Image (cartoon, rainbow, N blue to C red):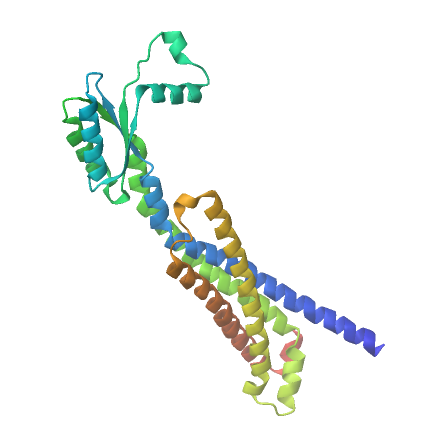
Length: 292
């Protein structure tokens, strides 16, 4: 009978520990993802800014030497990330692939122009700067037109700061929620041992002596939960880096180290604080109040 009761108690204890670890791991995983998103907001914004293409359409009378010199000058410019020449034939092939049919057969000629596709560095992507660059390039006599997706650029410029602020507020709110959820899980775990706490206190054990094993146990659970969260974050980063290598998520090792260290320390500190206050609450309760 006693052995079966011991097994039941052991299973109950393991179940309690598992629920605490799982709660900590899930909350810290989401907290870590938000932290990475917050730190990489500028990088993500820069990536989208550099996807804006400035198309420089050239006149049919433009000479190869003029085109080559313009491309070289654009490549060497401080504001340029890349400048790629696209012939009218290449443009026709791409357009045919996009619409799913050969429009040249229908028209009988190629109406497209030779062009140079320019991608700007993120620091130079704003409505005023892009307009200024476009006007300067359009001043060349053999350039017919310079165009870019102005509505998208306006929308991107307007929303970058707003998105960063939203992510910052969301991170702060989720940090508070994370603390409350982990605190709730640990308090429920300690609640089941409230009679043991009070019994130890009644036989003369000091508060610090009673708190110590609970704090150490939950710190270990917090560390295990943090490690599981970090494994999940690492897996997510590897997946994103494999599918979106252009974001360079694994390049900044210092930033990643800070996030990983922050998640691990958060698991320890939240567990420590939650356990301390939870045990303190039951230590200060009267014996009659333990039943409610």
